[in-house]
Length: 610
Figure 1 (spheres, rainbow, N blue to C red):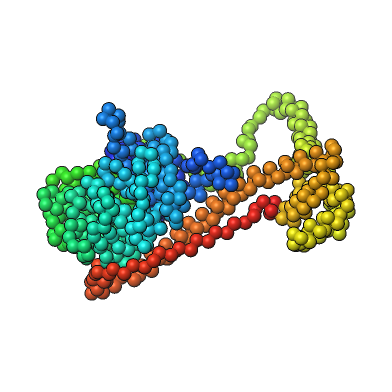
Figure 2 (cartoon, one colour):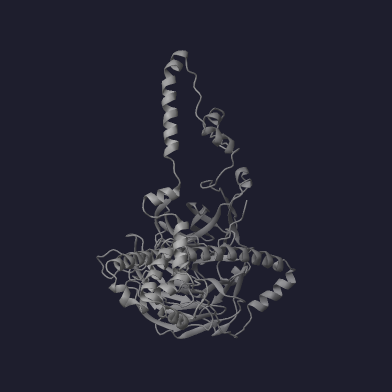
């Protein structure tokens, strides 16, 4: 059995918690109905309708899309009589911000290249009066959620903005890189700066009253609590410890009346829950754990990923120390949803659903003695599959054998006729006119015509032009015919043939046009070949991009696994060293370093390779 790391999994509940959006890094977004427990719709191959160039058009290219952040927002109603709608806002690694209307299943709007280098975070207030996005360029963009128009943008940090959050009242915006900064949403004036995280902040959230900010950086096994109405520069007021780094943080309640409730999910899918009446008590509170049971014998022998908790949301307070929570757990391919009450101080172990788990061949469910044999499923292995392909033997009497002799003779004749009609793929292509005569004869003819021309040798444009001009027009025309035929039959690569074809058509155009009607057939053939090669080029570019993306994700997963192993080895230290690290992490440090990115792009001329 394998522990699943959910760092690269994007999830977002709808405002009413009736739907859950999940993206696992393959460029597809699945919308799950949390009531029925089934897929409502799926978004893939989302492309802008304004792109008309064949070299930029995306077709069936969901693997080439890299979604980096996700937020489901409820739009405020412009008119009282009109029902409110919700949109799913996404950010991509290419720097685009787009909104999906889940109800209609359509793309609502898109802002292309909003953040060069990639979008890292999107956020909005509860009323969704505007959307904020942050990216690798250190900029924060303010976007109209209805039209997708860019309202304004400002420089929030010299480093990449890794996370964003808006206060519940929509008045304060917090941006996070290695440092946290708060701004007024009205005039974007900076209020405070919080320092202490050693790396980029992964998740950030406000408390319900907006008085405190919770944050955690990538690789940190702590959640820092900052006071938002204090001094301009300050250290963390409280630190909440976890066994593994968190990927999600949520908060509910107030520090004065209701008490403070904090919910977090770690990288391995364990849920943590804290409660205290104030921040001072929260620092000493021991978290309550909510996890899935993995002691089942079927799960122990399961070699794939195990069921985990990958999404959760606090819904309200029941009693002091207890709160309602909505949790999505199980496997990403078949999640289960349940509403439960979390009681602080009481750990919960939930039953793991086996939906989506491939059981081994020997695993047979036996609910009762009578149903054990009746519900048995026999799995065909390779030996059984080979036997299944053989004809079923049947016992025939003598009368049937006497009358079957004529049928056997007819079957033999028919099999011989089928054998005689069998021909190779090459013969089939020649019969359809795709291939002409034998290639050996054509190669000899081409060699006699282009005798003295070394196609594989590279010639500068000037020497190539002089060589073409030195030819007689009739000889150049015959050479052009041979070159086009060689390109059509793939006797030579387009990289060697196209420079000669181009130079001959340009320098001997008058003579080529004067050849009627023979040149018409030649030019039409050249046009058809060029169009077919151009059509195939786009598909080859898409395949190349998908292969590069899959390879990059495999290398990233291997690198992340190595980093996690090294990080766990470094953290297993004494308690004294951990205290020193905490003081260093959450001390005041105002140094900032410039963000540098070096993106290299290599483009191959695939058309010349054909």
